[in-house]
Length: 227
Ligand code: DC
Image (tube, rainbow, N blue to C red; front, top):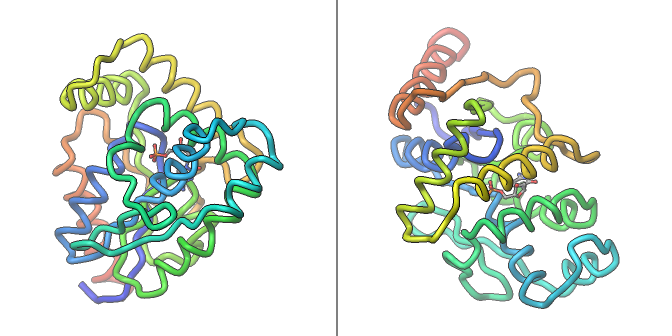
């Protein structure tokens, strides 16, 4: 496949974006950019510093006083907060829900926009998030919107957390997923949406490898017929 492309993968929580994006990037020799990690990183600091997740000026101060950066480690963009790798600390349900809350604020989205676009400048990137195809990379070469029915997304998230050894309750995951779906799709700025030119893939009942295969087929078809 031709180099220097930007591939975007948007979709709701639990649709399998991370697994698919990571595998796709690896297969193509591209860099994987997980933009949810940027929102999670800020949310993690907000929780740690006991900053209100609903106070615009407190969030503005947080963004101003925090240096979020990306470092390419073995093809994955690792997020650094004030120079420190936040690693798995940002992977909890609590941080995910907080990230969803603060991501509805313009000041937060603006503070992370350039960083994401700069990461895309070098090309050869698979960028995963909610607004990759609509706002961050509107001119991306290939746009995908990955969805799955809500029961399957809850089940996947539950199994993922169980596998990590986290003590989780199914009902709690269900509640968080509903809240995140609502917050991410109803917010005024950059809501979760499939841009008109995105290819929608329903991953319900499909394995991650099956979805990657479908994406590669779309790309190869497009490349063969449109160049
Ligand atoms: O992809 P994720 O679940 O790690 O993302 C956590 C939250 O961050 C998600 O619920 C909404 C927000 N987010 C966003 O608003 N825009 C993005 N491009 C990525 C994530």
